[in-house]
Length: 324
Ligand SMILES: [Zn+2]
Image (cartoon, rainbow, N blue to C red):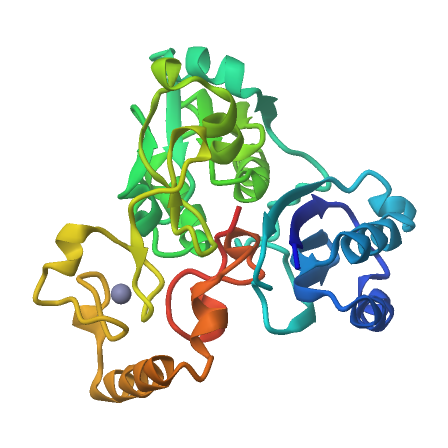
């Protein structure tokens, strides 16, 4: 049976977010919805899967709240249910940056459409910064973009403090996978005195979908938080596999490395592999070989950037906060 996967987020003050949890949970249960929804005072972020009818009903249920009346959802389709469970979680943030000055419900940067983006990042006066994590940037990014080399989005404010200066860097352009991290990051930069702050509307995914390859300033592939691992121009499926231990993308060359062992380690996580962790991964790998599940939810990701899933939350290391 066809499953619809809907991803959505919105930064909006939800003073009653905690009270919404039980009602939303029981509504989704009635509809047979699986996936994860995060609720915080700053908004909502989710990736859910279900039948066409169930997804439509659930989105209508969410939009019945006037704060969420214009909630937009992106959809994709799959034959196998991508999530095993339903979680509705109360969080401090819908994407974790960890600094209270960043408040996208108060202010965000200027949105730039994919069509206008090339002119912006071609301007030598504009500092272009990739807000994603190092393991995402390393398989693809925009021409000229700086890599802050962060391991998690929570390190981004430190990068800004140490490498960007509002008196020197007057124009800053930020981008991320689907736009959610940027909304938060531009809000943070504005709070720190940067005056002209731009972000790519719809994120890298919208850019790859709409800009023809011949005009594209994107180089490489874009890491995504689902079973595709990475996508290319036109959103064609990419060429990377995923390390089942840390969640990072691995190339064919990585798989030839002595540090790679299927389900146990890759060149990125080999050096942090403790004997305890190794034993745990070996047990998981045995379960996967027996086909007794467990692996399903790990690999099949979802709304990472949104913070709602991603390797981090499954306890398998990696980046929890990223997402779209
Ligand atoms: Zn790894």
